[in-house]
Structures are given as structure tokens and as C-alpha cells.
Figure 1 (cartoon, rainbow, N blue to C red):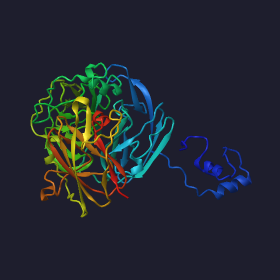
Figure 2: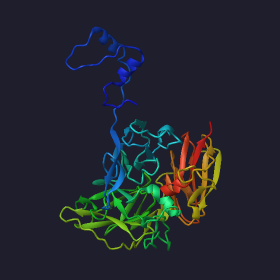
Figure 3: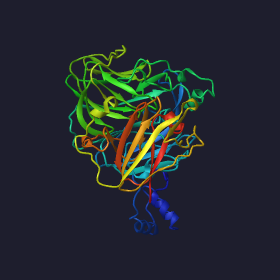
Figure 4: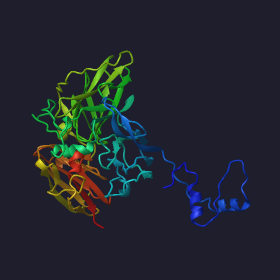
Length: 498
């Protein structure tokens, strides 16, 4: 693809490829009659679309936890550039790969043409070093989403960012619309984590998690693979917390994005209730909560009303650990001050802590069609650190000999998938290219307003049922969004038969 700022325009390249005289337009210099005629003859050639955003991907050294670490950044920031559009807009984003290695970008939760989904080997080739790709498609949805690399472990080293589609007619009013992107961070190359877990390399503290005091509501233990040295909110650690200045009485929409590679967060704001209004970009019947749990790759939108002047700490506790990352929301007449005490999380919990409480504000029942049902066990060989779906391993870097059979469906099918977790860990399962109904009692009238999601966390020894209409042909990745479980085989492809 020709970069937009290169010397030759797209029209000039077309002229040259057609054997026509190449005409360069020099400001202040009259063009020959022959050149003018050639220009007129090809004036109808469509012009190259101008991107709204350019994502320049480069390697840089940063130290969010105080330790200089190699990172993969977008436009030099962590997280990457916030992409924001309005409902019905045309999405036009240019990705420039300035790395020495290939890369890719997946638009998480977006309904896109299959060839723009950004999964190397499934929907497209990776973007080679020095190459650029323009992604362009009509936006068909609203809500809170994010983007990230699907190449190697680049997501863990910083290649991700928020993607917001504003509705033209919002059901809620607010004074501030703010992204809160939570993430985990390593002070070492992530490629070494699985060999350390497997005992093939000398282990570091990052793979010896101590017993954690922060648990999932109702659980005594939340098992984790990695003892991360720290966590971030909008790229900032507890050493220099993220903060937001507001006024007393303001209504603030917080778009909570769990952009971590493995960590689940339990979130609360001191002195305030959270009004939950959306899950994975889709509206839900509002719920008033004390705190909520956000699984890896999930998004929840909450609205808070600033009750009084002061400084209020936003807590994001990393489940299965003794750590939290904090931010601060404060009024203009109060200095930002963090409360580092361990949150107690009293009161009503929501988000993935209580999926059954999530209801869509409108019916989500599927149109008639042939029922295609799959029963998939989430399992593996824990001692070997191999993770499977339906007893099969997808060929990933740490499951190179895997052979995973595609899940075959046809256009118009009503696809129902029963996920049963036979392991002792949570698996945040993400389906590309579709929203699915999250069922509490599969096939019953009670599920007429089942919520629509694109990611669901399946707990140990738990069964979760999802269903969707097969209406977006192509090959779509379906995988665990714990990056290390994916890298060790936990994925399948949903393939439309042609």
C-alpha cells in the first residue's frame, strides 16, 4: 500500500501502471497541454481515503513500574491512542508497522468484515516490518471496545488502546466521558513466562504467585498463573496515579476496560455507588452496585455522581493477589489524595460477579434457523501447561504440534455453545466477529432479554451457555483471552461452510 505522504499519489501510480505518462504537479509551474489532457482523462479515478487516525507501532523503553523495560507502543503512549467515533461513521485507521518484526491489530468486539479482523493465519497475513495497512469499514454498533495485537506477546508489552463509538442518542446524560483502561505489566520479556512456569527456565518472582487476599465474590481462592510486579490504570502505576478533576454534582461515565493479558480486577470507588449501564459495549438494564468484577478483555460502563467535594480513590484489586492499582477522582477544590488501604468490597457486587443480574433493555431472542450445538470442555494438561478446547490444542507458539478442528457452521444457523470448565482457573472466552447471548437457562423464556456480550469468563467447574445467529461469514477466532492460555493452545476457529 502507498503511504499517504509519499511522493507519488495513487492516481499517478495508476497512470504509470497503465503505461500513461507520469505527471508530477509542481506548485507554480504550468503543466503541458498533453499532461493536462492526461489528467482530465483520469480525473474520475477514486482518491485514496484519508485516515482519521494513524497508529505508528514502534519499540521503545519505558518504566511504568520504575524498571526500564522494552515496550511495543502506539504513537509512543501507554495505552495507545484513543480512537473515538460517532455512531454510523466510517472507520478509517492506518496502521504503520515501524517494528523490526511483523505485527497485527484486532478490533476487539467490533463487527467487521472478516478480512479486517486482524488475526494472523486466520483472517489475514501479519503486517510485515515497514508495511502499512488501511482499515476501513462502516461502523455498525456503539459502545466501549478496545484494540490490541494478535501477534506473539505484543499485547503484553503495550500494544493496545481504547476504541469508543459514541451513540447519537445516549440514554444517559453525563458531564464527563472517561476511559479507565486497567492492565498488568511485566518487567521482563513475556516470551520467557511459559518456559519458567514449565520449569524449563530458571523461575523468577513473576511466576511464583503467593496466596492472594483479593478473591472473587463467594470464592475462597482465585487461582492465578503469574505474580505480576504491578498493575496500571491508563498506563500509570501507584507511584504516579491516574487522576480526574471534576466538580461537585458532576455525573461521570467511566468506561472500564480490562486490557490486561491475564488479570481480573474488582473495582470500587470510595464513597460512591456505581450505576452499571453497559456490558461489552451493549446497553443493559441499569444496576446500582457497590463494586464490580471485570474479567480480562471485558468492558463495563458505569456512571457515578460526585456527591461532595473531596478526593475519592478508585480501587482496582487484582484478583488472586495482594495487590491493587488505584486512581483518583477529585473535585477542583481538593488536592488528589490516594487511599492505599485494602478495599473491603462490601455491598452488592456486579459485572461478571453476577452475570445472571445482567439483562438487556430489549428482547435479544434469535430469529428462526437450524440449531447447531457444540459442547466444548475447557481443559488441558496443567503439569505441562497446555490448555485445550474440546480436548484439542490450537497450534500456537507453546503448543506447536496442536491440531484443532474448526467448528463448522452455516449462514443462518442458531449456534449454541456449552462451555464446561474442567480446570481450576477462570477462562475469559472471546468470540470474534459476533455478539452472543449469555444464557442463564438455555432456551427458556427467562432468557428473552439475555445480555449480549463478546467475552464471558467461565469459572472452575462451571458451565456457561452462549448462542448467536450465524450472520457474518468467514473464519472467526474463538479463544481464551488469557494470553498465556492462548499461547499454550486454548483456541478454535469457527468456520462458515461455503
